[in-house]
Amino acid sequence: MKKIDKAITYAKSLGFAVIPDSGESQVVWRVGYPHNKPHFIGLAKRKDSTKQLYDLLHELGHHEIRKDWRAYKASYPMTAEMERQVYTKGKSYPHTRRISYRLEEVREEFQAWDMGLEIARELGIRVDISRYRDYAAKNLMTYVRYHGGS
Image 1: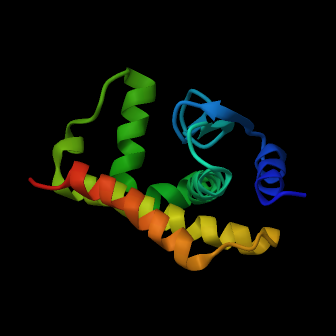
Image 2 (image 1 turned 180 degrees about the vertical axis):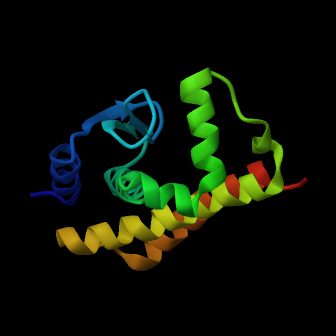
């Protein structure tokens, strides 16, 4: 079984549909609050299978972080509140402009990459750690640049 197939099988066992030809890599939970019920994971079709695997592991990392919503709210209170506002009132919460919120969002991204690597280990998927870390760093820099400044 190919590495990515093993990760896809795992994602499906959690309740996610996996869309291998999405425009971008993303995880989507079912609409509503709390925002932790599996819906689908999209993988960017323009990327090679190794990058798709790394993206899938990262998105599964987000799910691992969010599956216990109480723990998530304790670790990421501003992000959880923003999502509650979006899904219950249809609007963004004002604190999304605060640097502390932006750093919290970046912190979750870092944790999701680390969690993805742990999921690979648990599933017995061999990953080139150096290549995974380089790819994660490249992706993390997009968040750092996006959220940079005040």
